[in-house]
Amino acid sequence: MAKSAVQQGRLSKKQYEAQLPGLREQLIQLQVQLKESRFKVVLIVAGVAGAGRGDVLNALGEWLDPRGVETFSFHTPTDEERDRPLMWRYWRSLPASGRIGIFAGSWYTETLREESLNKKELAQLNHELRRIRHFEKLLADNGTLIIKIWLHLSKDNQRERLRALEADPDKAWRVTDDDWEAHRKYDEVGETARKIVRETDRPEAPWTVIDSTDERARNLVIGDLLVRRFRSHIKRSGRRSLKPIEPPRRPRSLAPSGLRRLHATPLDQKLSETDYEEKREKWLGRLHRCIRNAQAARRSVVFVFEGWDAAGKGGAIRRLTSAVDVRFYRVVPIAKPTDEEKAHHYLWRFWRHIPRDGYVTIFDRSWYGRVLVERLEGFARPDEWRRAYDEINDFEEQQTEHGTIVIKFWMHVSKEEQLHRFRARAGTAYKTHKINQEDWRNRRKWQGYEVAVGDMLALTSTSFAPWHVIPSNNKRFARLQMLKTSCRAIEQALDK
Picture 1: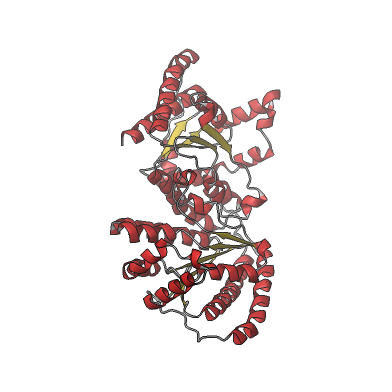
Picture 2 (picture 1 turned 135 degrees about the vertical axis):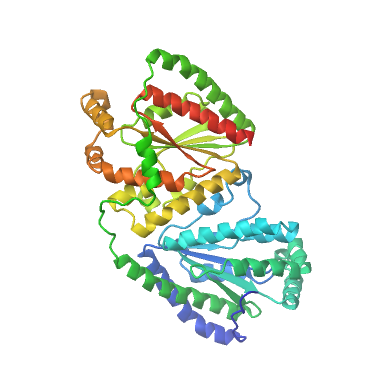
């Protein structure tokens, strides 16, 4: 392996039993402290066939309070999992804050298995490792303690272990043809494993290679590693939690080109009701055909609607959904995160809603709240919302790499038009539910939000998921423009 394996001399049963009670007490104390903290623990147990992953999991299951632990073992992806980006099944399995997630199979499993069987192109392997590094850094930046263990056995020890298991009638079932195939390819698989460990061994998510020759020593080393890494992490997280979020100030633009784009958007378009109704049916029909074609190609479509309060997002969404079979779309309105959502990374609740191949999901507000309202209101620290631009770009890139068509709209109105609509809502009985004090308070921060929107447009408009700024002072023009843009975006994606 890329790192020398942690060694510990062989332990007698008596020595093992003498050390175990103290270790178990420390692990339970760890869980009590973790429950009261604001972070989670992700433990990845990987290694060569026959190194004892199952035994390690059983030991941890006996030592830890099961009420605070979740164990995951991933196998060949199901149809539901194949219908979404690769990382979807891992995101939805992440533990909440205060809990431990043990991954017997993880985002490394498929990479190692496929490489050893198919000898994928080096460029593809490097791409997957870059994706893994980004994922783990994203989790670590959010406070997650990541502990990665590689269980090592020499080729000779592996052969002896597999033979011993097969000779035991009660354990023979644990040895599979795949295990013996891995043994025959020990050198080849080992070369790939060394590359994976080397390329993903990072300060925020380091690997610990543990010699698995002696099972008792191995188990104690793993338990001790959990305790030591946890104590070190809780000290660092304690210092971080004492640092207050900076009070919101008048924001400075990170990318002035976005603000210039926003200011340059013309808002004086006119469209009569007659012209609108005539053209609307044409574009609704075309959009319906586009969605059907995407379904036939097993391409999902994700619509993202962002915009000023009262810019017409709801009306635009209603027109959009009228062109889609109700059985194949879902509208996800995004409000303040729930307690469950707050216990996870901010992207977790959006990963959960990624549609299956051939389906449509419409987000009424989205993950961009991180760089808009959370930035302006001080709900996220500056270091959190600043790194969110890259996190969001990666999130959308994973979707498009899978085949999802991502279409993003910013519904843009003037400050004067917004005021006109606010007053109209306040004076109309069936519209008063659309206006509240928070809307008026946000309006007073218009200039700050303009800067944040400009940065969002400049820093997250990519070739694979560009922003479409829709002039919305005239609602009819905006709705028609949204339909046209949607059709062209889907047609262009399908042509590729």
